[in-house]
Length: 84
Image (cartoon, rainbow, N blue to C red; front, side):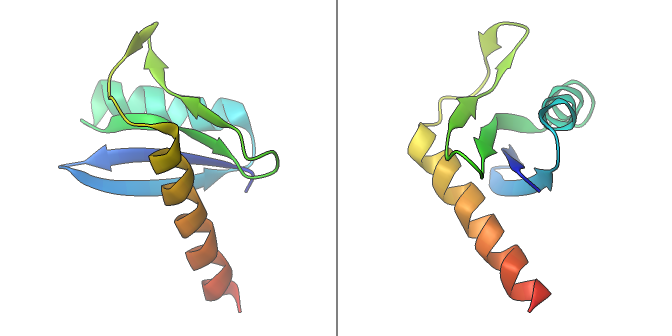
């Protein structure tokens, strides 16, 4: 799980992990199109880079990269705790 997508649903922030970037982008795209998710961006757990999400070239949420990064890291910490 290298790519962590960060999004909101009903004003609550969530994160979900994926192994490849295509699946991560697809999740955000279809989540926005079909399920009323507000996509924030993708965090690369290997490099620490943040990629704010743009839907069809337009930003849909004004969220800073630090918020995306912090949410993704919290998700990773929780996932690691569950594995031990």
